[in-house]
Image (cartoon, rainbow, N blue to C red; front, side, top):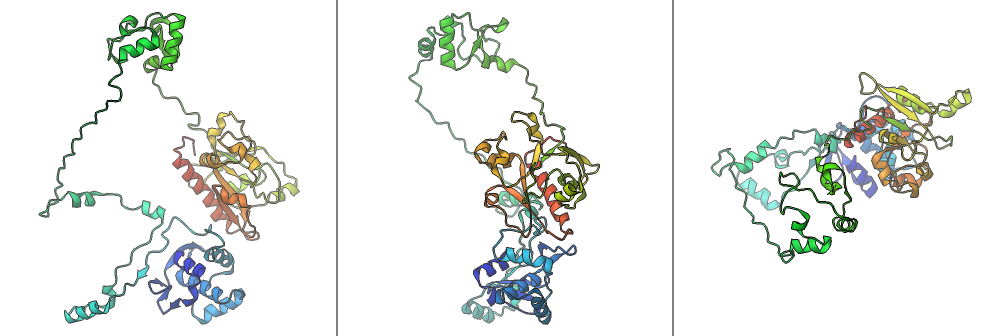
Length: 447
């Protein structure tokens, strides 16, 4: 896809050629015609092939104003598989650079694995090979095809580095036993920065007394058995001590005059319980009814359960009552089902429920986040907001998103306006993005 897209944008797609088995993007890159890409067709469950995408790009480049029936006739005459009408606009927008990506590109499968790179040989090298009697055919002279992977497919590979470590650790004679390499011992650098500072004089200057007067044992650790508690200090001495150490000194019981920071090490070390642990995840939706708002409380919960988009004004005109909070059962990739909460009520700024908010449908207006507790939200800086909460912007594929959406870290869900069989792909994309966000943040919610 990337090779064909670069050729279209660079204006070189018109010079590409084909034969019975391959299409030749340029002198260096050839692609098998029948190999599939990771562009998922909206009709059916398969993926578009190289020849479908290449011929559409070449035909459209040669005659941009040609109608779809003319393209189909041309593809049939050239014996190329054609792209359907429902896939045409989205695919051309991506190939021509109008959009940076497409919702139909499946990032969970390899982009393509059989690119052939032709490396020409110089004449002298070829002549010398013939003189030496080397009987190699043209295919053996080429480097083998190198698979192209997406980031996700690369992470699924074998991550064992035993062979690499064995290679570098093997003896020169060919044995596989790794060598034991001793780490060089590096002596610490000597510093004379504080060698002229006398600790007794320092404390005497700051507190008015030296170690002996205060009853402190030099070089004694806080956890050692020879630690002595501080004696009773006057109000003036306590004030000077707090100013010098930066800690507040409290007097109570056996820890009389012991700094708070010092006593903290003897307090209970039980970890603080996470408020969000085991709680229900929350999904926020806009409370408005604007023409650009695709989801609110009328239809968001139904879509996240039933996989099909029904416009909110359909329920509104029917007289359905709008709820402010709905609990749904997520069944996608979950058995048994898991409860999620959908609401248009934003928690108060200091509420602990913010730890449970996992996703938000944005309306494209910055004031939607005015009362949110994250840094910069009041001023329209939503970097931290979308790092904490996964953002989604829903639109029809015939609409152009607001410019501000391009600056936000949100996932765009593109729906066809009059066709509903593509809703499933957007439904899956929503839940997959939510899962990635929660796994990245190591959420303890019950998701």
